[in-house]
Length: 190
Image (cartoon, rainbow, N blue to C red; front, side, top):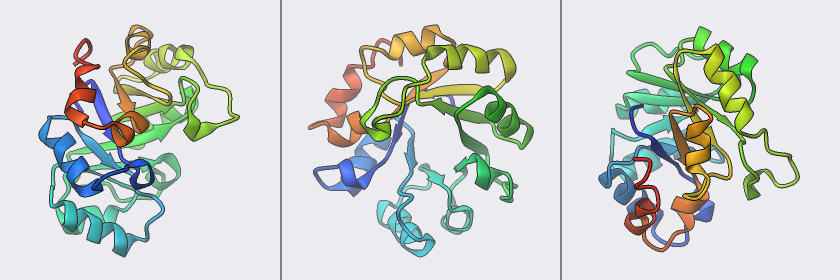
């Protein structure tokens, strides 16, 4: 990934037409990781078809991603351990520690997400890992690292200063009234 801002989808947080929201974000030049992990693979494939954009980053479902023609896949580390990732131009992995980041790199990940860095409603009750995690991971791996969890326009620079190559945002993109306006809040980093 070469962008410094990435959207992670969540249909449950999107108050409007989810398909249109995802297309608008991609059209604005922001990569979207289609994370809809509550779906079965067949439903996920149908969602990919509805969105109709092969430039989306598929999440978890390798076969659906291949069948649809996605060039990029993002996997939780346990799936990366067993998945056949051959043929994908980019492979991302979700990590939560330096050890996991190193393992993801060893398994062929071209980038990782690391978190959760700041407090977030998605991980209510779990203490954030902080920006120190980002700095420690960057010392260990030579691939791009994207901060995840509680990212906002106000704290994105802090994550980048700690060594992150970019940031991932879910709630902000899914809940905002206008994704194009929301992106403006991140102009200082993209």
